[in-house]
Length: 179
View 1: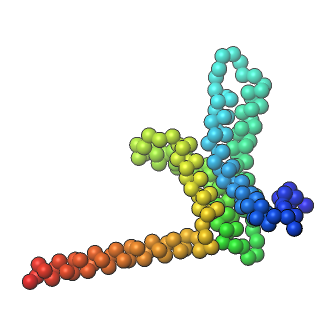
View 2 (view 1 turned 135 degrees about the vertical axis):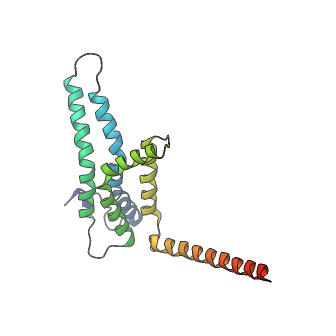
View 3 (view 1 turned 60 degrees about the horizontal axis):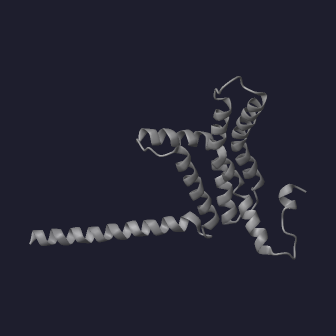
């Protein structure tokens, strides 16, 4: 029995706690992705020159931080594999997709930093990183059964309605000018 299965609420207990715990467990890859830049900062701090020679403790801390930063994308891959089921619910599907995106955490963090630099936006990379992953986690946790499809359909309906309104106004203005 895996540690995931051991942590489940037993039958007859509160079923709501079981689903809440499962939903929070599905956010483990995102937590690893959120931690990625902070693990790199800790590694950099551990190997930065300080007064005196580098101690064994700092060297061990640097190795552990670098190992954890390297393991963050692998955590996403492992969790995506564990979340694979034959007929997933919409939540499980969103959670598995988020786990797959977590695999790309290192290049996405570089892209975030480079993009902010090229756009001359002077905001902390870590702040944008945490805000983006938090938004993705909230979407996975709080989106309904329809998910992004319903949101996109509503968005396209709004765009279509706006276009039709502008088109009617344009034709009306052309009719007035033409008279």
